[in-house]
Image (cartoon, rainbow, N blue to C red; front, side):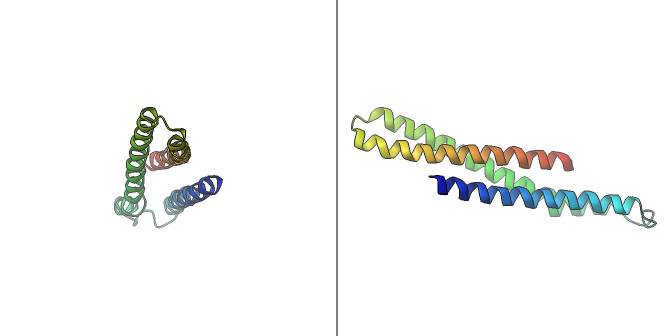
Length: 125
């Protein structure tokens, strides 16, 4: 279970790192352009549209996928709870509890990542 948690955490940290790097690079580039002699000839409207395609849209799609995953995890946990309540044999209940525990770890990690990505998106809008 610890290995699963670490792998999920590592994957989500990579997503967050990539999103934060893209956002910071966008802000730096925009600041450089605003303070340059080229600001009069640079089309910030086109740049903002390009940024939406390069950063904002993929970020929105990632958030949407994570929200779908979160809902699936929540529904599966509820289903497992129902199965646990209906069973009498402890030998059948124990694996379900272990599965529920793993799913709760995934749910917690997904929720943290969703919040982080949503904050990143909000900083761009």
